[in-house]
Image 1 (spheres, rainbow, N blue to C red):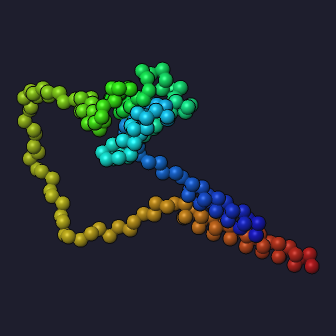
Image 2: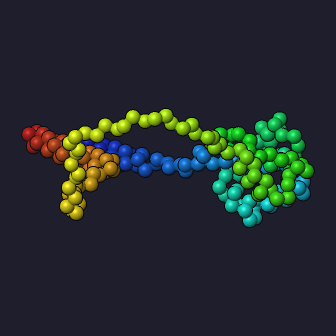
Image 3: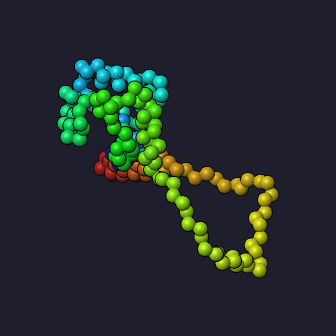
Amino acid sequence: MRYFFFLVLLCSTCYGAEERVLKLPEDSDKWYISVIGDANDPQYQSIIQQFHEGKLAELRKQCHYLPVTTDNPMFEHYKPSIKGTPTVRVQDAVGRVIFEATRKQVPADLYNAIANAAQRHRIFPLRPQPNPGPQPNPVTPDDPAPDPVDDGGTPDIAPTDPDWGVGLCVFLLVVGTVLGLVSARRNQSTSLKQG
């Protein structure tokens, strides 16, 4: 009987571990927008507000958006690489700076300035492709392969069960039950012989 409980416990542990797998979002190709500045600076507050309205709000939702204030520990990371505050920096997925504007250089039409900078820094610039040389004539076999027969029916194939964890749990439950019954039977026959 103790084998049965041990296997049930093992089975439930295995099944529970399978459920703890995290599915992280696929966001490795997202760009980064950093807005760095003093939280009390009206220009910084205005820039932050712009990223919550209109086209900049839509752009913000498509990127990793990080507002960094001067009292934030992340500011020490940015401090050596910026000319002043407030700074707006847009980077592509690999960290290449696409757009950066500081202080009075931050344009009133920030969205179009970022869009123009992104257009100038295409990841894959268009290059003229060389004309290929003459290609040899393809060799065609004398006896081409026959076309597959399409009778309109669907193949009768049973779907496979991708959830092997449930099957393993059922198997362990059956083995535990059998071992528990055998153990109980031995204990019963031993007690009958002694009594």
